[in-house]
Length: 310
Image 1 (tube, helix red, strand yellow):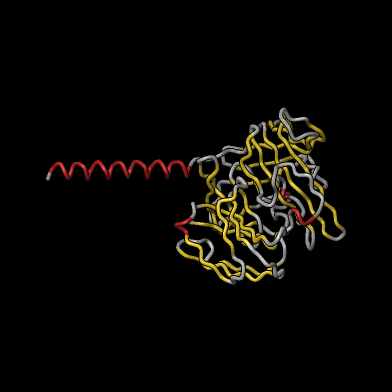
Image 2: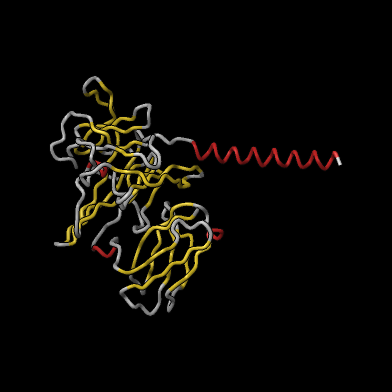
């Protein structure tokens, strides 16, 4: 009897230890990069068609107002070591997980040497983040966090910050999926859009937008990355047990496929949904995390969106 109890006790201690490791891993903070990092992003205007890509990188130090910052440049190339071009501002992180920028003239008209808040990774659900010159962000209002989650990158969890009424999100240690400077950049409307294509640190891709095949694509048409119109609903989302995906695209393709991609841009799931209007997704069939889904037709992207698996 004592032997059985001892085995049970050891098993419980082992499970407790493993659980503790997972919690500790999930709580590790990933600071903002201070060197060897590239953000590749794209600006699209659909009317008239205009597609411009930008690559920003961090290289070197500068002293502004008696405070040390890391310098940010537009890049002349997309390889390491970084080949710097136009100076675009300077960035620093304090000991409270806040990211500040000054002289951010590339995307912030009228920027001067007044420091402004770019990101705050210390906040939690329900908090308000006051970014930019007036603290009101790109939509003319403060950003209210309605959900803090996490995503698995390189076997480590990073927090993700989702905002009420804001279609993009922040990733700890990377920034916004709308682009490096997006929290203080004017928000385009209508057919205009900013998107982060890729984040590369120490010559390693940590985030790749699944609508692109590489960090530095040659873009020739808006179809290569624009989400196509259609009607898709996922309920509930996040998926905690079983969720229903209802879809009715405007393009009646003879064959359709549903695909899931993780934040590395890797395809993790594919299903033939030809002739179907509804399918069921089971959380147990997927690793927890944030995924971008695609509905593919015959050599044509019909719809894209996001789905969270708990």
